[in-house]
Length: 237
Image (tube, rainbow, N blue to C red; front, side, top):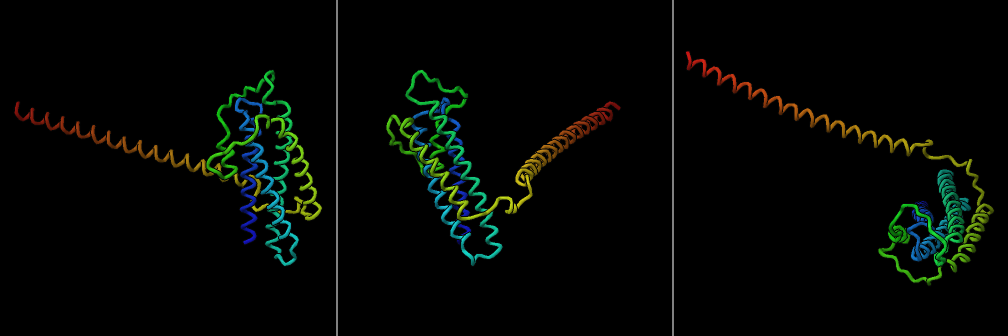
């Protein structure tokens, strides 16, 4: 039960972190807006809430001496994934801070980057927050006001990572992966290859069917012509 809860929390954190990275990459671009800055704030706060829940669950389990060796190995693997996810979140938060300073929304002389991308990010933010539609309540100067909060939250994430290392010592090189390197990529390629194979088989099959139909038509035409000629010969004779 605890293992499933930890996996569910980790999956949720991975999803929110991925959505946050997607939105961070649009700062300063043609899709940038006040709504985006509010979406970034809500998404990173959601990610931090999930990170705290993950940390508390995994720390309690890994400190429990009654956990079996097999289960402990699995929890250590989840811990390494969680730590990596938290590092990615911190990197993206720092990137958001730098881009936020470089591209304030209310400075008319500061041109946005013409990335070629268009459209809003509300769908990504709603998926991260697990809501139907996003509600926007921020002030018009959120792009400036939020930078200080973002800087404080970056420090909080850094402190969390440091405390994690102090409380639970799980060196990443001691955790064994459950799959060989590139296993997911190979499986994806094999699925793609099998799909291509199926398509080619279907194409060959349809081609053969058409060939049979054409052969039947030609044979029938030759047979009819032969019968007509035979009748003509008999009448003429």
